Length: 483
Image 1 (cartoon, rainbow, N blue to C red):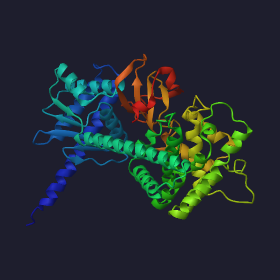
Image 2: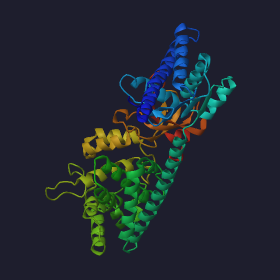
Image 3: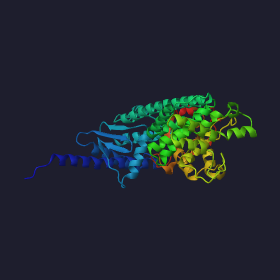
Image 4: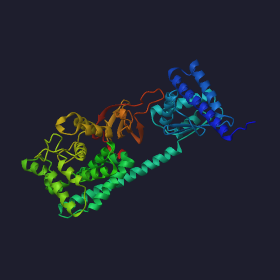
């Protein structure tokens, strides 16, 4: 006589939970879908709600307990992760979006819920998700007001921990950025005063930036939107370093290569410390003598780093970047090429980052910076820029069509500030944003984060960008919403 292995019983229980759990998710999706098509009294709606109530009852099992938990891309029913396959892919995706849009991470069914109670729950989930990304507390209040006590909803505790981790990462990014700007300022001023800057401090700053880009790229890139006019000389070098390292990471450079790239990017304009300050900060058009001095900064930078390298170890590539970052791909830039040569990949990366940050920043002779999206388009479409088209394409993939800090108008007439590009290269036009005003122009306090790639229960995008806008026209400082 054979005996039952306890492990077999456990496996059977897990398999049963997965089977009934999948049926429950499919039933939630089916009910939410037909509710958008027909009025509540329609027989199709009533049948779908009855089927949903039955599926929930079956999923609750003998102990009459049912918990649906959403975490990341997974759905758990009574602690068991449901398996995703082609037969339930659409249902899972729609239910995930339905819960996420309303800020719900956990749904507990406290007792057998009637079809009308499921109708109330799904209606509120759809309403809150389409109007504004509400939280679970708001849904709980509305359920209570409707007299529905069969459900208990809550945010995902692990998701809350993720938010805390993101805030900690942002704080670390702010420290890194501030320290890097202070270091760059010290280095440039030291060179101007004839002192030798500490290469050890430069290396430490670059290492910190590389580490930060590898662990929390979006936070550090977001800080480049600060673009302070008075600190342009210093913040520009730090921004170019951040963009270059992030771009190098995107194309697959090793950590050592990123470090050497970061050194070259941070020091690419060191030659400007040898150019008179009144020329650098001149607000009127440059005359021929001024232009001659400006165009000397690449080779002056190479000499400065060469002299520094004689006393302290610095990567050779940093000197090459200082010399080449304005040469252009066809060598029509400066300094002029004397004999045939090949621009280094490091210089090509820094040239793209330098061109982007310079064009999108307010400076003494550029009081109105260009919109980031327009700059990317110009870099991509204008061959006279002399930038490597492959590197530009990678840069656009990094920043998205709408880079961090871009103010956009949505088809809901809401205003939003772009936080970060979508990680899916097919969704570059649908970044992650923070909505700062409603459709009537009223500023939101607090603003609402939204992923424009997310779809509603009907499978349609809830919001779409229709155009970019000038932040100054609306009195919006985009950096307030990013850092």
